[in-house]
Length: 110
Image (cartoon, rainbow, N blue to C red; front, side, top):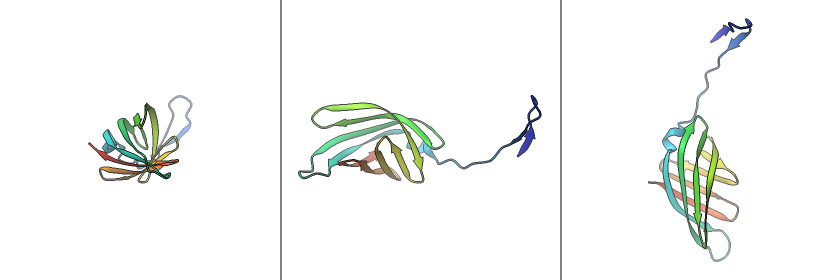
């Protein structure tokens, strides 16, 4: 679609883009993180996605091992992958798997 600006008569072109269905990810996800090092320590991992817009999602993460850590995140969706910080998760229906340096993560949507 093309048109002209009413302010300065500049040519405007609108391009239709296809956004991923990120809204389906909104909700609570829970599971575990397993250390990839010897011993394979296990921790709980939670992800709550509160907002989604096209290829971007926002929410909070929580990691509990010996102590609990949590914080906000802004993630990007590319194909079937969600990436935030150093974490990359593959999305498959109601599951996400992947991880970040030294931990493997498995999550299920609640």
